[in-house]
Image (cartoon, rainbow, N blue to C red):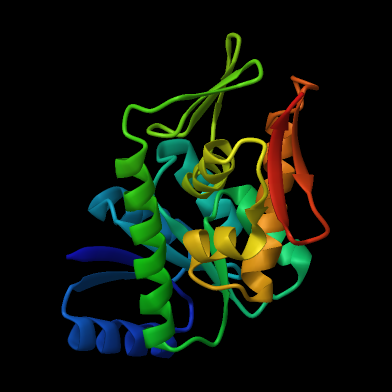
Length: 229
């Protein structure tokens, strides 16, 4: 069973999504919360496999809720769902610790596809890189625990950051097509996935800024290359 925490203040919409997904797919157990504070409470009680949260919520908004969750759990996959579709909205959600961002209104079938693609990507990458580490300039990257180390400094990446960086590490010095990264991380190549990728790359560049020999280069929107001079 996939334990899904759905944090949504539109009760009617939440019950529709819950009903359709639990009946149609039969492998979901969906827990509902109407605001960020309730979401934190339910999260602590049920330990969900994945969280889908609206951004604009009463009492505590989705971004603030996710910041609290990330202090407790660095790995649980989180999708933000909101009618807020600006690039800044995507950036705010990802900075808070979300793995992906989908636009409302969405169909339950669409949500199911996003959830399964995200869980599959994270699981596959975790199995593939179990015990494998990369030396990138002065950094050590351990994808099995999402840990990037620079001397004594340790940076815990999000699952999606780790997946993107692993793809670049596996192809060090070679162009990785943008479409390939988008499909492996999000299962689609639309503008939301593309905006999310740009934000993640910006965050990774900041994490790698201690070593000037390491860079992530963008080749005219065709793809990305991780290089060590």
